[in-house]
Length: 161
Image (cartoon, rainbow, N blue to C red; front, side, top):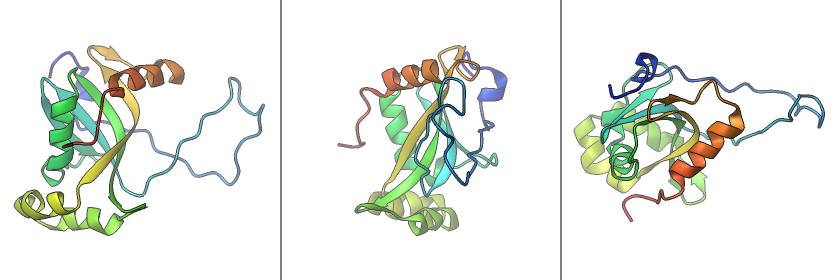
């Protein structure tokens, strides 16, 4: 699939977050530490190749048909082959609605496409870039991968406008 390494064509192995009792001190880790929010949603790897998008759960389940809104947004806005790591969420005002996500999973793809996705669109909170073009970003320093993700995502907008 494109120039991606075979282990990045999907389903994609995703690193798991770890809960900790307390944040490490200022000098606890060489180079410091970075922290990100934990979203209340479904973890997903998005494989974008030649305008085609597949969404995979961290357990290897194909979520593409349940999130046509995310598939369309990525297909329209990602113009380079890449693999993204993020969290699928549904926002209801200023809160996340996990029940809305679960409704997508228990309904048919047609019901999701015709009713649930338009009424309660999902968002993809991308927090990592695993590959871009033919470059596997995973072995790179976090700062290098993050810079590539920020460059790639600079023009992304809510979809559709």
